[in-house]
Length: 72
Image (cartoon, rainbow, N blue to C red; front, side, top):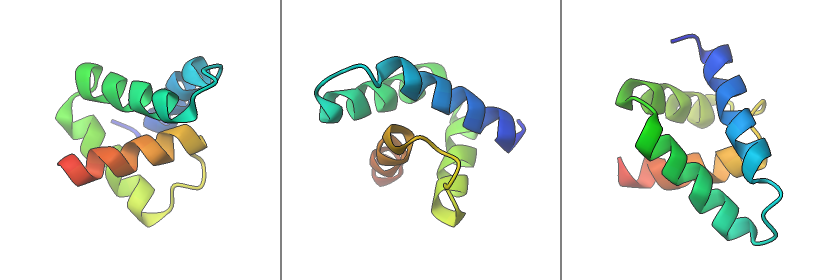
């Protein structure tokens, strides 16, 4: 899948959870969404992007991907 599309999708997820006042919970919710609903290949791609750049990712996504990366 196209990395630009993954970035857009991940940022949309983060935008949804950004209204959560507890930012740690928001990060956990983003991570859980990526784990439950994204194919492993999609997660690998977003992890790789985050490790090499990540500048276009919402802060919640970057934090969630760091947690994903430590699990995978």
